[in-house]
Image 1 (tube, rainbow, N blue to C red):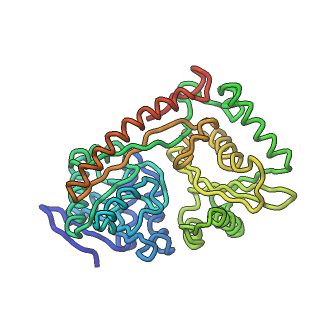
Image 2: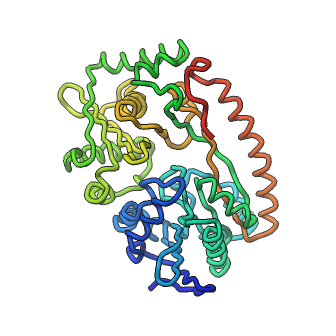
Image 3: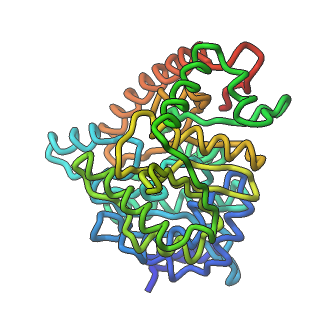
Length: 397
């Protein structure tokens, strides 16, 4: 049973299982936000839980907060109790180590994020600032009542960050690399996009693509329901091999992707590389057909070939986005190498609250210094814009 708190005329519940929340009501709230993504849809979060990917045994214990008024869901947010900091992409390992060295417990902590998914978007599902503030207050109370060391919300949108700033939380910035269509002079196709790039960048991309083609590699593209079970099986084999190459264990189970096939097939596009009549690599991209946005998510290969990663993960998806009228392609966490391939720096944000005032003060000082460094870093990156002057989109955010 969910934990229930009554506040004024709101009923606030904390759910240990996403299945306890009405999917239609959750998705209706999400669709009304400024920056919704498929990764916060109820089916996605439920699949993470039901497949055993994000569960207490893997260090992700759901603590979803819902706010009801007169029996109607009016606000919600996805939270987890975390027993580690893996799968987050906003790094607080140094904070945890500082706690440990002082004999204090950092874990469990409270985390607002989509597990294993460094995609910016709305985190506080609410129609206005008042209800965002209610959610932030409920999170704070949950952390206090649980005597947790801290609470964190990752990759939120502007309205989220404003709500946490009003509550006195500390804000942190990061950088990702995204391609956005030029709204004034849209690129017609990948050839047109290349023509807008500086000569050295364009030449390098052309050389990389030619090298892949000369190795006899071709691609097939599979959208939605056309991604059959055998294709999902091949993709998952590639996905696990990527982790094995780094001596690691995959975060997501095969059952998670089976649930994506069943409940969210329209949100996926699979690029499969073939050589000698056999599949050799796969790149899975998430898409939002309504908002014309795409996200590079997972890739892997059974036969490592020079430049194949760039072709599968950047050039093929960008060409597909341009051909289908998509306006944005996000390349995922980190990676300056993405700039040379047309993805420009974008600032991301997170919010943090620490119970211990001494550590909070130290972290605030660190974040102030880090923020200055991020600003300088972004300025330096923008000086290395791969597009000709006036020939490409301005770096967003």
